Image 1 (tube, one colour):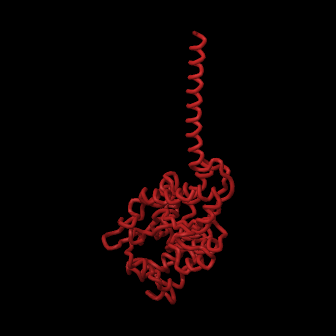
Image 2: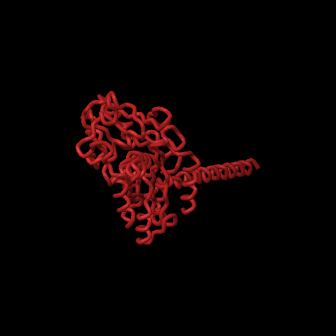
Amino acid sequence: MKNSKKFILLALSLIFLLTLTACGGGEESSVEEGHGSELEGAVIVDGSGTVYPLMANIAEEYMTNEAAGVSVQVGRAGSSAGFKKFIPGEIDFSDASRKIKDEEISQLEENGLVFDEDVMEIKLAYDGLTMVINKNNDWAVEMTEEEIVNMYLSGTYNSDDAVLWSDIRSEWPAEEVNFYGPNENHGTFEFFYEVILDEQDIVKTANLQQEYSTLVDLVANDEYAIAFFGYGYYASNTDKLQAVNIDFGEGPVEPALETIGEDLPYAGFTRLVYTYLNLNYAKEKPQVLDYAMYVVSPEGAEKLAGENGFAPLPSDMYAEYYNQLEAIK
């Protein structure tokens, strides 16, 4: 009788342990399925140099913490250059510091991709276009939006010869303004030209560069320089540069994570930054879908935007993207 009782107790214990193991195994499997620890392969991203630091940071965190077997390769050819690779299907994601253009959507269709069906637009964060000057510049630390626009427009001042700082305000130095900015490959240039300058010609003496690091160095070594680029590049170079506080009509506003946003004081120079996903590749390649879901997860852009000089979007916007992606698994 005693042996019978022992047998029953032993059997019950074994059943209990097996149940725990099964439950534990199920939870472990769920975690693995969440963000591809078992996945392998490559994810190819290119495009915006402005978005690059954020996307590269997300990729690093993903490969380190979630999917060591996946290689996420992030380039920074520029927004327009990225779309030229994305449209024919050469890359999985195209980062952009401006919205995709109608002609680019038409080119997608010519290549058999229907926008919103085969391509997903993902808003990543807010960026603030930042005007930067040399550390020794003690006169142009505050400027109006109108002054910024006029100084960069061809023909507003005596730009056939040179624009002088004293042309903008008479009390400023009678020294030539050395204009810098990113070149036409970059969405930042297109945003500046199309939105800020309202598609009017940029000043003829502007020196436009491909690399943002080059722009940082040029301004850092030129007392009479001014340049424009995304807030993140300024935030990571505050030891070399200073930002111009912009007066949009209610007093000077400093570009900062707390002021950048569509309904915040720096709204006049605020823009969205994006990534565009080829949904066909996301359906065909599990690692592409998994990485896309990580980008819009709480551990992705929402968490890392601020660390890279961007203001994050509301949490529910990222959650909506995540649900859309989860639905195609």
